[in-house]
Image (cartoon, rainbow, N blue to C red; front, side, top):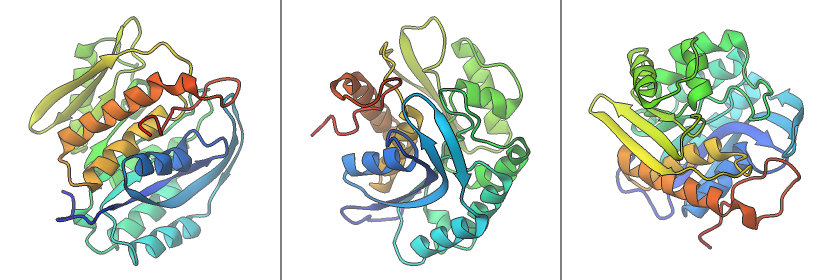
Length: 275
């Protein structure tokens, strides 16, 4: 799906919220793009006041400003992949979908949607009335959605999967509802010493496994995985290879996160562990 012959470096766009502590959202996405050698552009959907312990304030960006940001980037930059994170509201989803629909060559650009619904600390980042619009307006045009187990459960109005068979069942349900491909992230699965992610599309399934790293320093891991996959696809990698590259990057970034000294609670990943 990536545009043919991407330049070096290729360009990727993140549409997401801003994290003032720098560990998640737009900030994590741009760090990840840079780590992959990809130039990153950004569209901010919300400004959050947060640190490694909690979110204290959320300021949604007006829909017309979200739309204007997307139009400004896509009318000028040749974008080779798009990552969508925190959308937050029905108005934001409408603005994003409308701007993407009218963008040139949008069918050739792989879009990775990370359906961010709540922060790890529990703060809701998604309005209840936006779920139907997410399915109707954004999911069908994406190359991949990357929910974790709680997010998949919320998307399906059910309980989180507890084992691999339940993960398979929920991934198939998400595919049946209109997703073209699903990466169901199993890092939250209880009583498992493996972080197992399940990729499912019409070609079948593939498992991506890594040793579970017992660490509190996972702030921004979902954002970073989705943006790593987007960066790899911007470089021209097919979906499964991009997921493998993203999984390897995030696993190492979590493993080395203890080298950082950021915050007092759930610290961020070490995005530049390879440098």
